Image 1 (tube, rainbow, N blue to C red):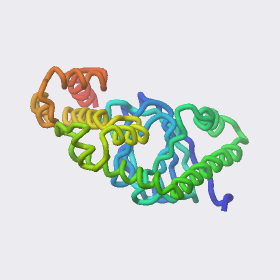
Image 2 (tube, helix red, strand yellow):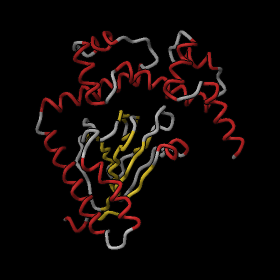
Image 3 (cartoon, rainbow, N blue to C red):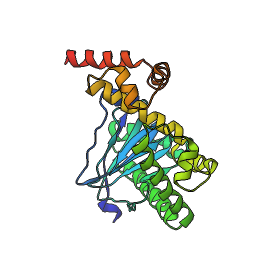
Length: 266
C-alpha cells in the first residue's frame, strides 16, 4: 500500500504571494493535499465549512473536497503543502479536517528542508516521500485517537455548530453571554473551548469575519464606506476604521484605492 502512495509535489506560499494571489476554492480529483500553516492565523475553507487556522495546524484536503484560502481575510497565511497521490485520510463529516501540532514542532521545523530537497537536490525524492508518509501516518493516528475520544468528538461538534452560527450572525451585536445561552453553556467555558480549537475568542472571530467581509465589499461593490459599516453592524465610523486598520494595516479608503489601482494596471 505504501508503494502506491507518491509525493508528487511540495510547494511553499509566502504571505506576500498569498495576498496577491489567494488560492480560491478548488478541488483535486486525484491527489490529497496536506497543508501546513507555517506562519500567521487566518481562515481556510474546506467543504461547506470555514475554519480558523493558526501556526502549527495541518489542514487535510482530501480528493474531490473543495478547499481554498479566504481571499478577503485580513491576515494572509504562509503555508507548505505536501501533495500525495494514492492517499486518503478518513475525516468524518462533522469533524474538523484540521490537526494541530502546536506552534513549536519538529515537523514544521523540517518542512523547509524537505521543500528545498524535493526541488533542488537530486536523489532525495525517496527520502522526501518517506518523510511525507511519516506525516500521513502521524495525522491518521491523531484522527483515530480523536475518534476514540467521545469527549473530544462532542467538543468538535460544538465548535462546528458555534462557528456556523457566528458565520451566519457575525454582523449582529452579539455578546458572549448571548452566544453561550444559545448553546446552553457558560460564557467562560464557551470562550475557553472555542479559543483552544481556533486560536480566537468568539468575539475576535466575529470581528475577523466582519473585517474580512468589509474587504470583500470594498473590492467588489461601489457601496460607500458608511453603507458598508452599517451593513456589517458597526455603529461608530471611527471604531470601524480603527479595527480595519488594526487588522489589515491600512484604512478602508486606502484599501479600496489599492485594489482600484491594481485593476487599472491590469
